[in-house]
Amino acid sequence: MKITHLWALEVLDSRGNPTVRAFLELANGARVSASVPSGASTGVHEAHELRDGDTTRYNGKGVLKAVEHVNTVLAELVVGRDASDQQTIDSDMIALDGTQHLSRLGANALLAVSMVVARAGAVAEHTSLYRYLAHLADRPTNSFTLPTPMMNVLNGGKHAAGASDFQEYMIVPVGATSMIERVRWGSELFHALGKILADEGFQTTVGDEGGYAPSLHSNTAPLDYALRAITAAGYTPGTDIALALDTAASEFYVNDVYTLSTDGTEYSPQELTDWYARLLEKYPIISLEDGHAQDDWAGFQDEIKTFGSRVNIVGDDLFVTNPKRIQTGIEMGAANALLVKPNQIGTLTQTLEAIKIARGSDYTLVVSHRSGETADTFIADLAVGVGAEYIKTGSLSRSERVEKYNRLLEIERELARF
Ligand code: PGA
Ligand code: ZN
Image (cartoon, rainbow, N blue to C red; front, side, top):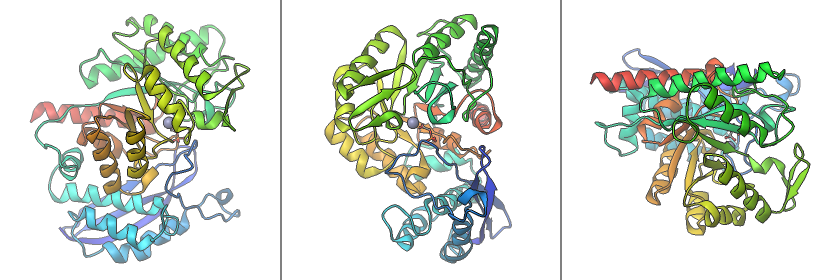
């Protein structure tokens, strides 16, 4: 079905910073929208998020230029095309931009259009977004599995000032067999954790991704609190609920040294691997994301050699959802799992290509939100559509996080009915 209108607006994300929301109208009058998220611990190799730099508005963070690009050159390119034309629309937008990191038109402009075209494609086909995304990804559209969430219940790093150096302490309800149960277990644990922290006099205010952000004065104490909360909520650590970490190590790495100021320690890349190995012995951790810095390929190789057979070694800043970097990682044996963030690369088609390459080498998939989110639940459908084993979409609080869980509940219900 023909696309008749395309336009965009500057709206706010969950941190109150501007972001791009695109709208699209089809020939039958149906209207859809899509909003792009924004990171804080952004990898240096990510596609370019275009901000105005005009300090008289939003401290330079406005996105009016990106919005203008949607309203003019991208609308010119897309209006009149068929909504099912995802691949060529995406590749034509990339060609029109003409830069390596989409810095001319902005990856935020391109992704907003790419997402809204996909949503329109689903509407035109009278199908659910996850089913349509499965079709775009060349996957079966008659059998789906739902991802297990990695729920970020304790926030640190760049997402919570005054907390740990590590960015994310996640709980993973591995023993729950349905989304209804996964969400309930996560919520019960989140509240049990809040009670433990409050009883001990810690702050229970939450960080950017909805997890608690107490000053526990150590990078391992949050793991202990998470374990206690699992037990307090009536679950068994490891078999019911496991743990996962995103240390976001690029943020505490300078000149080959990893500095954990909360612990007062410094590690070489090799020493850091050894320390992680000890943590993995002590805690039921099933996944370690960005355990080394974004260009420390040797550090990641070392992780694979040391504990890659029993833990997901997830590349986020390392891969930035970029097919070329994923290919390099595969050749070097530097990870075994891919974090999927569409706004790191700029279009849906490139995201699906990244996924295809990772899957070709049996990588585990973790579809992910950003720390700056909107209420858009696109990634929930994406995770189901591509058959990701995991989804990372924050804690059990804050609507921009919880709405993704709610969307997964809707999808589970829909799949049970048909
Ligand atoms: P970001 O954090 O969105 O701030 O980059 C998320 C992550 O590192 O996984
Ligand atoms: Zn990360």
